[in-house]
Image 1 (cartoon, rainbow, N blue to C red):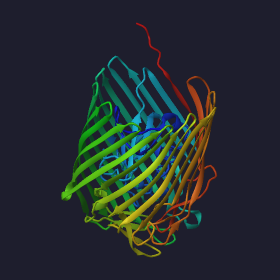
Image 2: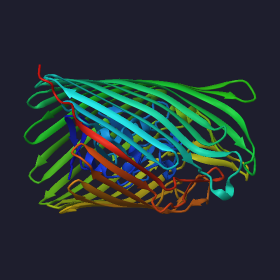
Image 3: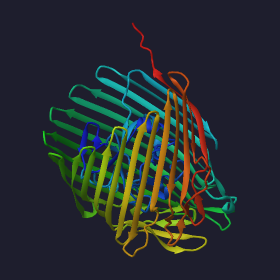
Image 4: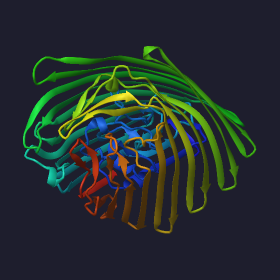
Length: 610
């Protein structure tokens, strides 16, 4: 059972938290084009409206953990090799950037039980780590599936005496599927589609005490949003560097990054009957972010400490061009800076934790986020408890960008206040020879939660605005069990969460029950894996309009053909269940049965002797 959170490679912080680790083997056994679909086995992990990133609008791809969050903004910090990858303008995540086969592991920390992370870590943090470079490694894969789906990827790496290089790329396209049910569909409806190209390169330098890497990641994607006129596209790139020095009892890391991108989208108005459509406005959102962080970790025989500071400057603008003429521009600059300390001390079977972060944000906002807790080791059991405070500043997207989904218009609000959370949790972890289990109870009190509030609703149009809602209380229980026996591996996850505003009404977009189960069988070069995911009903942003619950089944098969070549097939929503993920006010459905089959080759280039 993992008891620490890896901030950057080689620097971690022990925490009284519930931490799930999905290694490359687990990720490889789970179906899903993008990484978000492979992480849904973790209790509480979901995107806005329970949708998949495959054809969902990018602005809905923010993450919710433990049911915290009722809008598309991510309330979970996502790091890739220590570098933040939440969109600088809106906080959502472009899951098309990450090739799942090139990810070594993913660590998911639920809850804000450590003060190491600042803004956007209201519900927790997700840390992804790239596959380490190997000598003369080369990979290639190709797959095809229904709905005109094609995916090709390739990777290469090499290691020299003090240097290493790795690169990977992925190209994907799908003809997509209709997101409006047959009985509601009109002549304006088209299949929701996506095509993208992503690439990533790493250059590493290392010696016994020092390590340095530079990383360049690029993404170009284009999406059709389900009608003739509604489309969006994104160009995005991040250049990052990380220096790490390791000494006997101390570690030091320095990170810096620059992200620049532009998001473009077209919005339309759809007439009753969905047989005619008119363009309302086109939108362009250029943005960039510059950030840096420094961390120092000291280890002693009975205590450890981690100190750090970080800063980020974000600038972005929403430039709207209405079809009627004219132009409206909203946006600006945000700057945040934080300092933090995290300490832990061991006394026999007990370990005590204390942390604090002081954050300074634009607009004169200042936050102090303390955290504290303890763990007690009782043989194979670990009991834990913690208390903490956390915050999230509104993004430029929430402050300044208006958008439209079908005939549902959501307006910006430049007067939004930051969200704050005060939480407590208690848990019990058990680790045996063939199984592990983790159980947690938690209570989170939220103030100024930013929600999409419905101002006006008719059969033809919904008008919403982002507003700070009244106080909300979220209470829940989560469970995660893993085990293996001979050739079998199994995992079971469950989350119950009751999130309500102070007036007793349920917080929208949060199901009370989420569950998943997966079982896999290995023998020689053969693998078979089957999984199930289930969600109970949840409220839409419209009052008293619940979205029904649903259950889907996944299947993954892989057969090694030679020592280097493997054939595979993946099935998502195997039973072709139709389920609703949103109301615009027309129902919007999730993905139907999707299947893919292909070949993956992985080997090493022979070294030629001079």
